[in-house]
Each structure stands twice: as C-alpha cells, then as structure tokens.
Length: 292
Length: 291
Image (tube, rainbow over the protein chains, first blue to last red):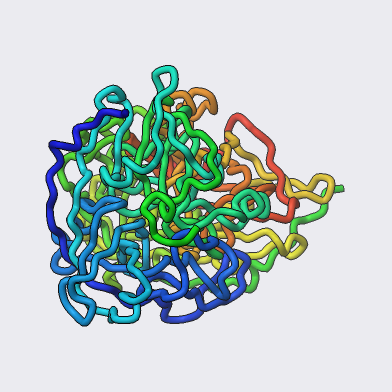
C-alpha cells in the first residue's frame, strides 16, 4: 500500500459552465498548408468517450470526449476551476434539466483560442441528452497537495485520491511503479512546454511526423501514458531522467507542434517513478466509465 | 563555378511598420524549474549594456534577456497581431521617428513571441532614447523565396540576412552556416503555439544543466545562427523527422521550465534540400558590425 497524506487534503467547490465547441473564425491551417474545419474541441460531444481512439475522427481536431466546461467569473475564479480540480474528482450539475446528475473529471485541455481552457467531464448518456450549453457544473476538488510519504521526489499534479487508488501503483526496489499504456519519447512532446502552473493546461504529443503517428496510432482517450525525460513539477519542460505520467485528454491534431493532449497527474525529476507497460491502463477502466 | 543563388527580391514590397519602446513589466517572483523563486530581468525596455552579439547566459537575475531596445506594435490590443510582428524581418532598417533621438538609424534583430520586437541602436542613440519613443521599421522580406529551392520556407529573413548567411550549394543542397546543432527534444516554449510562423519565436530549453553542457549551449550568443534538427517551421513550429530549420537567436537563456534562448526560424524544409555546416562564428552582430 502506497502511503499518502490523503486524509489532510482539502475538499473545495469550484464552479463553471458547459462551453460551446471551439471554432475558428476562418479555415484552420494544417501543418501541411491544407485548410480544414477542426471539429470536436469541447462543448458537448455526444459520441466520443474515454476509451475511444485518438485518431480517425472526420475532420477531428483535438477531440475532447463528452462534456467540456470552463470556469466562470474573473481570472482568479477561472484559475481556481482550472488548477484546483483533479482528474477523478466528482462533478455535479447544479443548474438545468440535468440538475443533480453526477459525473467525473477525466482531463484538462488548455491553450485554446482566446485563452480558453476546458475541463473534460464524463457523464452517462442519459445525462448527456439532458445537458445544454451554459449549464452550471460544480467540481468537488480534492488532490492539490497530495504527497507520497515514502517518495518525496514524486510530485502529484492534479491527481485525485480516487484515481490514485485505482491506478494499480506498486513499489519495486525503492521506486514507485505506475502502469502506463505507452512510453513516449521527449522529441514527440510539443505544445505545453514552458507553460505553468503544472496543474492546469496540458502537454501535446505531436502528431504530424509519420514516425510519431505510427508510434501513437493505437492510443486511446483516457490512456495513462508516460512522457520520458519530461518534468512537470513547477512548469513544463525537458529534463533528462525525469518522468511525467498523464492521462490522454484529447485526440490528435493537424496543427504543427500540437497533438494528443496529456493531462499531467504525476512527475519526478530523478526517476523515482518506474513506468510499467500495461495496454489497458485507461481511466475508463479505472473509474468504471463503461467503455474501453 | 558557383551558380548565383536566385531569389525574388526585386518583387518584395517595402512597407513601413511601427512600434513603441515599452517599459519592462514585473509580476514579482515566478517559480523556476526547480521551484525556487526568481524575479526575472531583461525583457522589455531599453537595455543599455546588453547588445546583440553578447552571451545568452550569465546575466544576473536575467531571463529571456532581449538585447538593445524592445518595441511593440500598438495599433491592435495584442502586439502579436500588429503589422510590426508579422512583417519586420531580421536585418531590416529601423529609425527613431520622434523624441530626442529622432532620425537615428538601427536594425531589427528579431521577435520574442508574445510581445516583444527587438531593435539594435548604437550606444549614443540608446542614451537619447526614452520609453514611449516611436520606432519605424522599413519591413522587407515577407514573401522572399529562393527560386531554385521552392520547398524552403523563408521566415523573417531580409535580403540583407540572406546575403550575410553566405549560403552554399553542395550536392543539390543548400548549406547554411550554424554555430550549434540543437536536438529536437530541446525545443520548448512556443512550439505548437499558433499556425502562423512569422510573429513567434521558440525556445531552446536550457533548464537541464546536463543538456546545456552536453550540447555546448553556454557559449551561445544573441544573434547566433543555429540549426534545429527534425524541426519544421512552415505553418507554425514542431517536430518532423528529417526536417531542418535554421534560425537566429533573439533572446537569452531562462530558468523557467521549458524556456531558454529564443529562436526565430529563418529557413525551414522537410524535403531534405537544406543542409548545414557547423562553424565557429555565424552571428548577425559580427556580420553587420553591431556594437
């Protein structure tokens, strides 16, 4: 049993609303100079769920499964919604026809046009049909400040105790083992670099170079992945020997330097985390979301 | 006998774009990559003792240091949307248009993503300049093409810079000089950010001391020409195996995760027709006598 300080974590409500899907004012320019309409960046996406593929959606661009919401109010309130919330936190609809329905936070996607940032939320199909754009959602945040008692070099980032308990963490020769669906080399890791705080936004795993596409083609939304030599402790960047573990939060991209979104949940500078390949390491399985 | 490199410079439009010298700004402390706090210096304003040609590393509390004078387009809310950000090219002539230094000439040396356009003036002019003074750049270079290398995308490259590079043709490839080759995994902040190439630089990450030493980055100078391996900068910036990008260093090193010396891409292709040769010196300050 991996010991943590989860009994000391504060539980705090933050509020936001279901957003419109992001569209560009004109055609999007793909990496290869072709134009497209990029579909699926948030809003209510009825037919994509964690466990579904990252690639292959018709004109899909960084497709976010299910519901996307952003904070409301001023920058401070928005930032609390974006940063205090953790993957695996409970989300409740507090206004609208679906009032009272409960879902779960499955990822974060940032760097959207005009400073947009989405929490990616999973609700069951019945609730999806009732939800409307603008409905108010409240997240019971819990996880910021999570520490591993025997692994002080491991930093939990936006990780809820609920997800932590289901991830099958183990211990081996003084290292924390984490099942991951894929280990991704640092040359594929793009947008997100230089961003902070680590708790909000995401990394992008670039999907333009044919070798990267081949290596990533079987990735699924919700997969737990390891970014090798990437440190996401007090910002995002390259650090030889570091490890970042994250959840795949959105699909592939046709824009240069962008791609599959990875929401950080754990990181370490000195290799205290040991990734263990497990093809079914997916939050859909861990959180019982009904697919994958 | 060496063939003359053909381009379309006689068809380039020359257009005035304008910016204003901006004050530095500060938001107090910011967390460095290792969690320690830092008050970063060197972005914005007038830097009296830092010029293109100086080192990227080592300035006390310096971070993303921008040599010389920092100006910003003002006709739109976001400086990155202004004409200055899109049209000014490295090597373009700049002139002060008001204030005590009115009429003084300088050189546009690059653009730091987000906000800052960087201009070199001599010391005498620097002493006369005031924050708020206007600087106009005679922008020429957007649309520049090499007629025999249509796949190579030029960006922020003035005809003057193109000439100074001294590109050579060897085995059907165009060979550019570079002081360093940078592996793709070190390319950080700015990557993926916007599909428009012109207004954005991106950073060679210098927060991993092992990487800085391994790739000899501590000797990098502002204004150096470098090669970015497996990086493609045609519509934005990102990884593409086999691509080559040549760029100019526009600002200094950083202690923030994912950040470091900034690069304005000037030549880029994925077609394999752009090569590079590592040389001891390739710097715009040396070429143009900027002091």
